[in-house]
Length: 131
Image 1 (cartoon, rainbow, N blue to C red):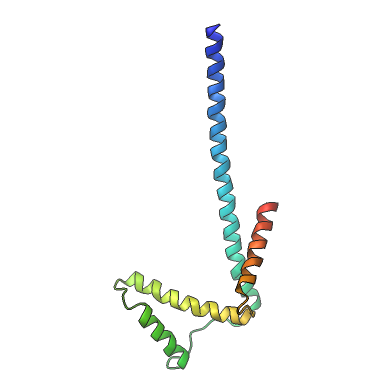
Image 2 (cartoon, rainbow, N blue to C red):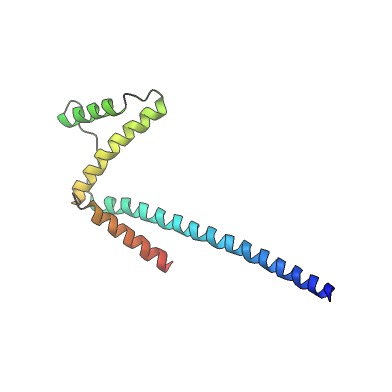
């Protein structure tokens, strides 16, 4: 009888180990799916902007009031960064906010940015449910 009990315990142990591995893979696949959905949502945000904005963002003419404003923002925000990569990131952060303002103005988002975000979240949720 103990031989049968040992065999049954061994089979149950292997089944539990197999099931725990499968469970681990199921969580991994879930997070992979979430990453794909977030990537699609991020890409959709830019594709909507590209589809509806005819003129891309361009830097203002040197010496204009807008260029001077951006340069003063960069000087104020990036004064503490002393290493080249950090300075570049800081410049891109400042330029990124101006790009976003330009595209949101062109798209007519304005103060309704939350509505645009809600639309993207809704599309991502629909994609996650149906995929």
